Amino acid sequence: MSTSLERDFTLPFPAAKVSEAMRSPALIEESERSRGARSVDIRTLVKTDAQHEYEIHTRVPAKTVKGLDPNKLEDDCVIVRWRLTDQVRSWQYAGPHKNMVDARGEDRLIEANGSTTIRFSMKIDVKIPLAGKLVAKMVASGFEENWPKYVRLIEKHCA
Image 1 (tube, rainbow, N blue to C red):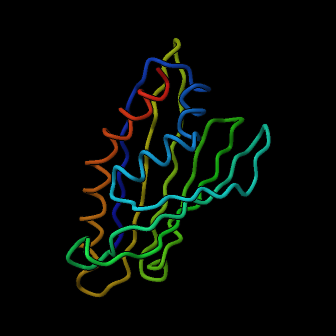
Image 2 (tube, helix red, strand yellow):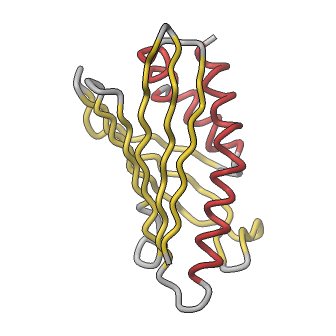
């Protein structure tokens, strides 16, 4: 069962500054740790004037059908690709549940009058019979809860 979300948030900074903050290892680590990551390792794949690709490897509480299990840890991975020329970030979950969970997103930075609107979008498809729809909704609610917190982190790193 697939679930999709899209939300806009506007910050009083130019897109280049927002992009720089979002790609900052300090912001990435702070964001991951704020959501329970015990360790964060950012591995650069490509970095040019036109693109920035990296993997975010984390050690996180294990994901179960009932939610997170803080007593068990698992390695997780997200692949991030920035097209810097048009300020678009795409990401894809590549962790241990990737055969059952297809989670991906595309985030656009839209600049107007010195401010930037970040249009977050994500789609999740959980291939678990019966429980897939429930799991997808749980994951989507996590995005709904964490996007405003993430935007506050971006704002902090831009200031």
